[in-house]
Image (cartoon, rainbow, N blue to C red; front, side):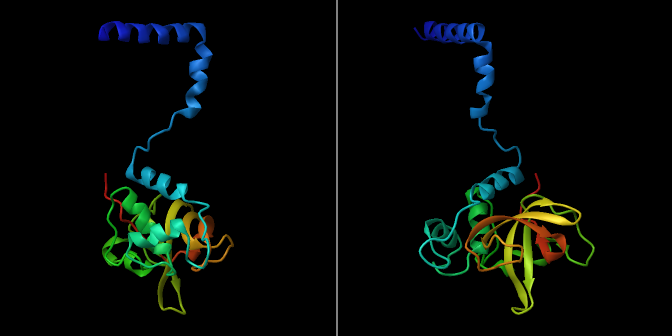
Length: 193
């Protein structure tokens, strides 16, 4: 019986392909392409969040609450680093202890780029970009590198605004085009594959 079912199914597929060859070929848009690397999978996760915005109050909302919970932070706290951590956790990747604070994502062992210093390697998609704030005396904001260029960098950041400046108390997840000179430091947490 099972053999007959397979033949019937194969016959139907063959008939469909003979009768309407363009119909099967045209349906490739519904096929979801699976990422082939950890970096591509991470990019798929963080890019899926672009457009998420705070709801109800500053640093609040259902998605923001999930980001904050991933790093042990409470609703109402800044969430840029919690967003990075949430994306990592979605893939089973490990971030630093204290992942809810941007500065903790940049230990010397993970740093691959520091503005004004020789770089260890070219930053890549999925690496973490850090922004130094003189008024804080430390890294105060973090996001993902999506594209690294000679003069400009495309990032995806949580808890930022859609403007051109580096905003660490924004309203959502945004794709940003930044001057490379705005990025202070880059770390890599993705295991080599």
